[in-house]
Image (cartoon, rainbow, N blue to C red; front, side, top):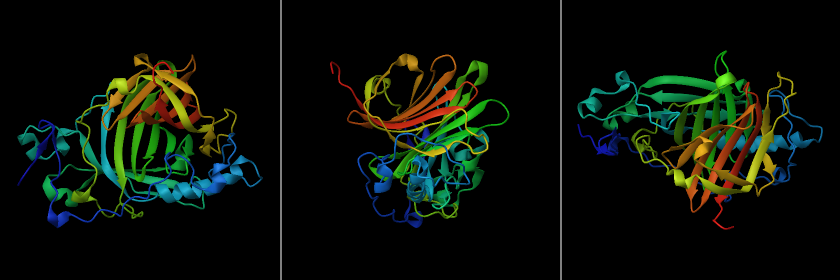
Length: 364
């Protein structure tokens, strides 16, 4: 058995072999420069104001929600499919969490290799004709050695449906932000799914676990780096040794200097929710164009935690009764995509904003 060690023998990855290799999918079709921009003509003219809609119904009275079915259909076509990759968990301080010893093959331990990443699948299906009808299944596979990756065993499998989210906002390009309640305690998982602006088959999902109430704090962050491998098949086929993604948790973190400083929103999409909505209808809406040009200043006091894959996360107070969950993906050349969710102290989602930003040079 042959093993290759990477990152100073901190991580062991499956070794590609001819027996388990399959040709990668056809090259991705590149969207417009901002991956979050709606691609249909009808959705480009949506007004700024949003109304939440019921998961079971769609407004047809000519209000701003009447344009959402087209946007939802576009989103459904892009989010649906087999998303394979790797996932890892980080503490609130940004330290990678090692996988439990009982799931790691003995060969890893013999070589003194620490394992931080799960190989994952996220088969996702959205009905283009039924807004809010989206579900996905997060599958974690037991670590394997070499080309045993094609015979991987499922460790855990958890399914989620958009109708169980306390808030869900989506963009036609395939990105979304969702708040998932966890148990009776005031704990939320705020999930930011961001599609790469230059390749709609590449995305990251950052899930911030937030404890609210009197002592609000960030408990940790889960990161999933994924690529699209084909139409939805409910996870019946693994990418195996042909995976284009690689384990990342032990990799180099983003430099804090790449996050702090002055930024400007070049294009933004937002969903703003009223606190008086009927709780039975939920908070579900498409992200629509928002006013660009906002200046943002980030510093070390903003609770910024840097992560591998050019990612970062922050959780901070926004006044006495609000908190901001924010993540960012630094794309290079002074640009980034950020996703921000504003929460009340009791976990009520007030605002979701996803934007493309550029760094502001000193003196401008």
